[in-house]
Length: 267
Image (cartoon, one colour):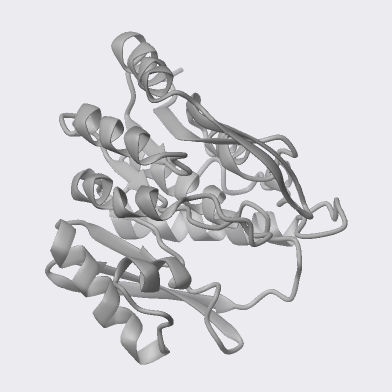
């Protein structure tokens, strides 16, 4: 039996299990990967919001990364919530020589609306986008990263292209915050448009951890050495199925049903 691909998730911990490190571990495992973690912050949160945040010391975050990479190694890395600009800069320096794919989810605000990144931390995102293989902003994050308040549909490709060119990376602009009956995700590289994927917008409040799940799934499929567009296709299908399978927990934005998604784990 061949060894599973190794995926290191660098992100914050969600005590309620719906997002962050916990969502990443579930996703990586369900898609046939071996999950490792470097925790950047510990949060007290649930479906109603974030009640507390304790950011890890940057040296401890880097120690976690070193412990994983120096012994087990990794075939792909997913980066989520950072916690501080110092953590962002240390990671950018350490991972600049990493040979595998890096998926960076530029987390700014939780599904509940709680702020998870300061202005200084967001300003440090550029260093990580410079080394990322794929960056996965939602539309509000894409607008913020390109200095805009909001983005109309016709401006999304231009904004994503600007960001891709600036950092020589691929942008997967997630369309969950868009308008209309269909959610459209767009893929753009520094060379231009790669493609787009759409699906009917699900009418549900159970979307806690959607961005974490998608980025972790994408990192896992890239670790499986899937081509980019196929990796995106499977990651999106997994996330969509997890939303459909949400267990209905909590009074607010409920978690996804990662464990209920079995048909995609063998693809």
